[in-house]
Image (cartoon, rainbow over all chains, first blue to last red; front, side):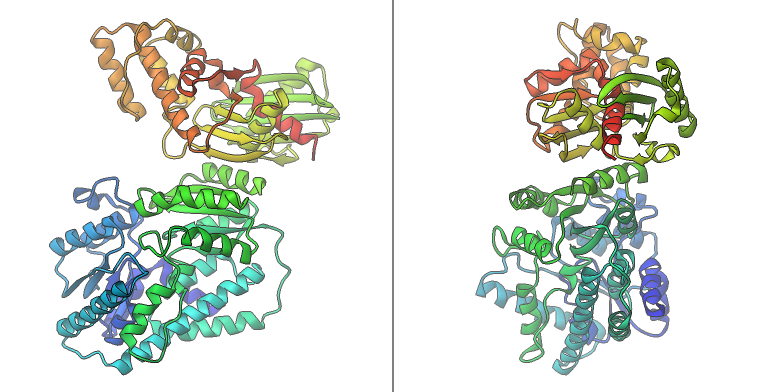
Length: 371
Length: 255
């Protein structure tokens, strides 16, 4: 399908896509975390661009960061130091984990972009005071953008942007549901490319294209569902489309995920009525959280079990970036939670490159055999 | 029904032939660079030794890192599954299997039927595997077969703090130049390798009885060092090295 290829091309060559966009006159703001208030950036007429970090040579980052920092952060720093992100007009760093926070300082001291912002989000998403605080942080971010780019971000523009991002979220959710219902309709690898592409491409173009893809997939006659075991992938960022194909080779289909390059990105819609900033803040309270945020002691375990049950997944594969503290801290409790529900799981720690194929297939095949 | 299991590891190729669940014979040879040739050779040599014809073997399962290169096998299954099945075949009471081979170490939990319940495998690093011990034996100029036994004569094992094989080798060389007693250094090397395997196995919560399989199970120094870590006896069969091939042959009977 032509529109799918557009997303995959953007996901494979994000810098080329961004450079072309820049040439058309759009200013670009980079970000690393799914808690970034993209709607505010978009409403300012700027392009929010998720950074996934270089997978080629991350040695430049080693001058600034210890080897126990995750490959996402080291890769992003290596990219900017190597001059690969010259198209950026700035970057925003929501405070999620300590490593991203440290990256923010190193970035600020070593780059010369027009715009830089730390958006220090609350960790506890349960109290009225944190809601009020989050709204204030978002208002300040809006003002910072207005000042830096000498523009006014109107409430009307914010409402329009909310609409665009709601369409993207709704359509990504639809595509996930279509795949969960019958994985033959769209491959895990393609869907991964679509989600990743949605964080890179022009959002208005992405929203339109997603509606089209969803319509076409719905209308398509369904080939029979493959006889593979259904699994769910959980973790932080997945930048490895090969994982999906290797799992298929091992006899499993990824039918859902709990990833910030997946369901955590598109989960939770924003209200289109009332104050737009309050509405954007509210989504952080409604959406599925990552381990850097708190709602309750067991909410992530409950969500994971519920997603596995809803999508009839027989096992869970934890795909974690090595040295990712928040996810590693949560892993033992999540595993226990799954064990108590008799849902088998396996842990796969990855860096910028996947482990050798032979080793990985041995683990995948054994796990799939266990299910 | 006669079945065979072919286990192509990184260093050695193993074959086992079973007749209605009874072991007829096993064999070990070096893998070399060509998996297909290694598989054929170990299988044909075993057939010849047993005076059997290839046609008399009804089902063959291949396993090990070279499992997909064994064209004459009916099915390929991972060595983790096969070691679980093999250990259960040798002793059905076993609940944890520690398999240390040439470049991989694995720990797996098996249920009362020999099915794998959970597993963990070394990923980034080969410290704690057979290759680590080989490198160290070479640095100590000791024959690999005597390496483990020598460690048992240590008065006070040396401390090897580096995890990396290359750094650990440098540490060993400095200990040698300092004049440290050879047996103490060798015991230190085994303690270091055992620590890696122990830490990995604890991630899945190793439960007794524990059986050690794979080529490194032939190293008594490693078995004793692991027993010290786990604070319990570790069972080792004479067939530890061919356990994966036996498991594959058992599974071939269920195809």
